[in-house]
Image (tube, rainbow, N blue to C red; front, side, top):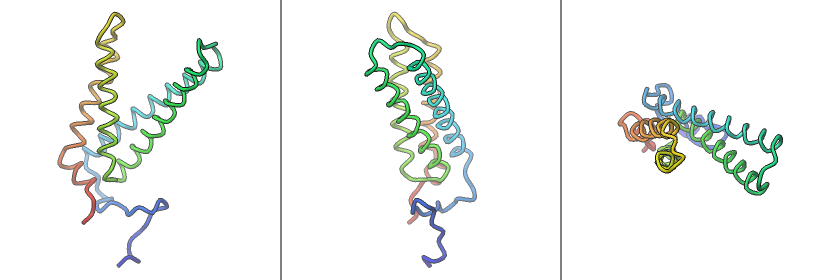
Length: 145
């Protein structure tokens, strides 16, 4: 029976329903993938700014760049594994969306509030959290028995 299973290069078993991905799972992967692309663009911008401009603190500028690159890589991994139906992605997606919600709430407050950016972060975060707990996504990312 084990000889019939296809094992990918990472050693993980393929999802049970790899042929049919529910629309909710695809939408969740699209949202996380879009967030990955946007954060990747921000990372490129930070690299350009680091080369072109003189930062007030090189240590802070490099630390921010490293954090942005790590977050981009994490979102890339989340996107791919969401499409694969990995069970652990729901937790990763929820954590990332909660972090975005925290940033959005901060953008809604204060003297330099940016409601436009806040809602641009808040809306997809709420949709992604709701999608992560829909029945089709739960079924597609459930561990095989």
